[in-house]
Image (cartoon, rainbow, N blue to C red; front, side):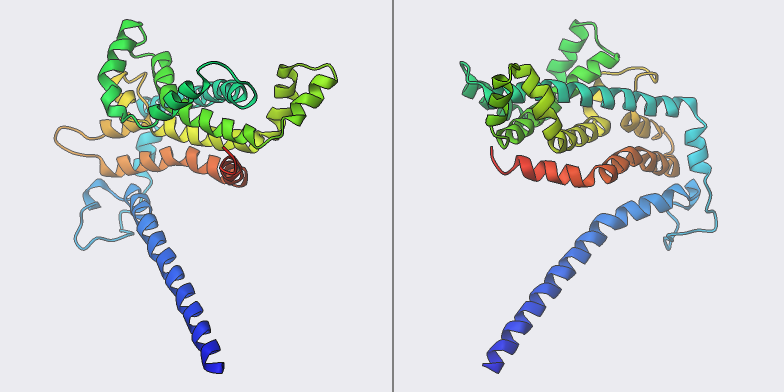
Length: 284
């Protein structure tokens, strides 16, 4: 019996050690590129490819950040990203909330068909839609405008948002709506006074995800803009790739600055973000 107990304990210890080793390896695999990106942003451009490579060099400086933050064009990229990402997030939440409420609380013709279409949109590779959307945006006179970018981004953020919010509302009992109606309220009253306050974790999860998607979107931001006053951060990073040289340190500095909003959002709403995702996954 003692030998069996020791064997079981040894197996558990080995299993825990294996899991810990896997987590450490995964953490290093994910974290080292970010650490190297941060290190490069503090180097001179000539020291990026020095051999042997060094994490910290004698040319440590904030020059790359000064160049980015002191350049009006680069700051415009950040402003554009904020305008587009915030607008996409707010509009996506509003539309997805109304659609999710309809799917969760009502039965209407072609409901399953519409659901299938929404889900199928998630499976379409965005690159296959570049030319059609370019023609559509140009035809509507929205090329090189905020409206063109916002509406295009929403095409890819709405399906996920509708699916998640519908799933989250499905976890809330319909008796809440009925109690409001008994007191003389309407469906709108139930939505805004009861369901929305309860659904804050789910809305935050969808909002953070939507903001990240819009903030990091590159393909359509490149295709649907033409001038510096409309380009976003991902395009601004690309613009640092010159014909004869790359400003690697500035590219890394701009990447770090571009990562900060998403990181801050996640840290601020981490618990509600994870809670909203798990709650929405309980019942579809």
